[in-house]
Amino acid sequence: MEMINSKNLFGALSKVQGSVKAAHKSSENPFFKSRFADLESVIESLQAPMNDNGIAILFEFKTEMVGDNPANWMRYILTHSSGENYISQWMMMMMKDKTPQGFGASCTYYKRQMLKAVFNVPETDDDGNSQSQATQIPQKPASAIKPAAPNPQNMAPGAGVR
Image 1 (cartoon, rainbow, N blue to C red):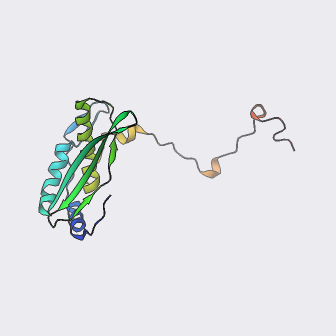
Image 2 (image 1 turned 90 degrees about the vertical axis):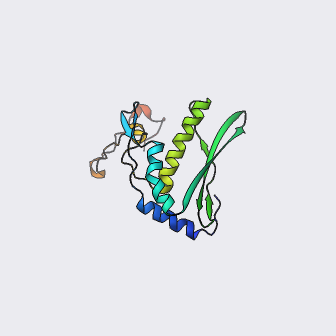
Image 3 (image 1 turned 30 degrees about the horizontal axis):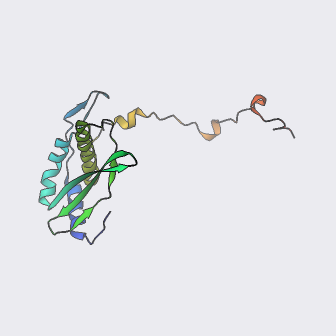
């Protein structure tokens, strides 16, 4: 991450974040049977606030070898009409499908997620289906938890003997 004097840029970014509207959930994820805002919807929700505040975002991609394997990386450059900019760190893109089509799909996914994160684009659901339906286990109050009785079969010889 490259930090520079960027009060104009961050002031404008704050205005964009304060005025951006929710991205329309126009696409369907058949795997999770849910709807999500695709890249086009996210860009559509950002275009006017970004233009009104003199902000543009650019994405760069590169491929480098990590050991014997190619790794794909992405970063963004946030620019302001004042000439100020912010350059993010490189982020490794995880790819399930190592084809050109898989690379394109990964680029689209990462750009969409990055735009939503940088500009705080509201969306009530995500196509990650809340991290693949991680269930929350109800917690018992501490007073309701009773220590388990020691099981002699699981103890080392002489353990628990006083």
